[in-house]
Image (cartoon, rainbow, N blue to C red):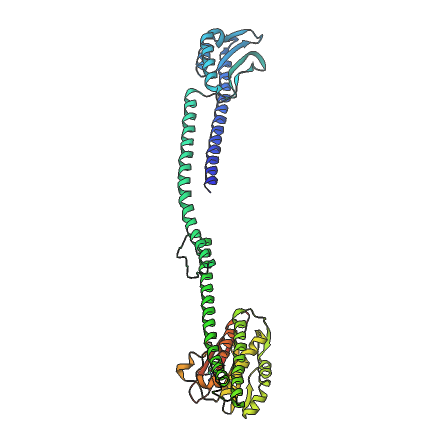
Length: 445
Ligand code: ADP
């Protein structure tokens, strides 16, 4: 960046210098051409009534000499009338030498002459020859002015160069500092430390976006890590109880303290079956939470509810329960398999807790649609209600565990509905049954 700045300032200085010089010398050259023309006209005016005014020519010639011009006036036959060189060759040589010495350094030129025929009524009466250093020359004052201008321009260039270097260095430091912090945070994260956050705020939108993305990434990784840790400890906790139970039972039977009756062996087998179900539930949860990507299609909710209910026919009959569906049809964009899993989980709970009746209601509003699963079971106490969607949470631990519940079904249901951009809630009071409602957006987000 410093190199670019340096180059830009240097280029600007050189270009502006060259441009101003070209403009100025162009102006000087035009002035000199005009002056030579005016000299020729002055010379012509010195020819009056067939005679040359030699005093006039002398005055013009000497004044022109000190401005750097040599003149030579001839008559119509090219015979010399008056010339600067013939009049004062020493002064002439001195002026020429002085101008040549001054100009040689900047312009590769030489003294050149322009001859102009002088006419009166179409008849030539002489020739005026004006010589000067070409393509242009500078008077001492002009030369001095150009030198001062040059120096001023170079000084401005040098000051801007230093200023741009200092500013550039400050700016680079300001820009680089947050990027360096972002890199350090990313390095921490690569090492497994997700607590690192970048506090910096800059005036550059792109840098702010980079910082926000890295902070966001850190938050997401930290949440994932916390989830992983909690899941591991929850799973270990859930597995320990049935494993210990089976282990102690088997140990007592092996040691001969307990007789291996069919009932005791069956109890061990039941415990193992529960373990198998728990592992299956954990797998489902991991699948849902690990891959929230949905395979969206148009799903008709009534058909979906009827399909889900069919798989509970046998259980409903066995428990003597009635089930009814109302509302619909309603179509929403959803992942059919996953949404069916939500219904299955809610229905499984309803079937387990209902005393006589289960109602599924399909509803819709302008922006959302969904279903409610209502049962007339024991209900859920308010202190449990706010936790039942947490994984491994059981409101009635002993009863739920006995029935094979792992406390994961509602957590899976919530994950799926939230992945759709929706929400799920429960309304319940002890002995008044429970209603679980899933609400999903009707339009794809
Ligand atoms: P589980 O597999 O134990 O049923 P869930 O996550 O499905 O796990 O439910 C969590 C807890 O919420 C259950 O253990 C139960 O105590 C309570 N619960 C869920 N549904 C109902 C319901 N319909 N009626 C009463 N309690 C319920």
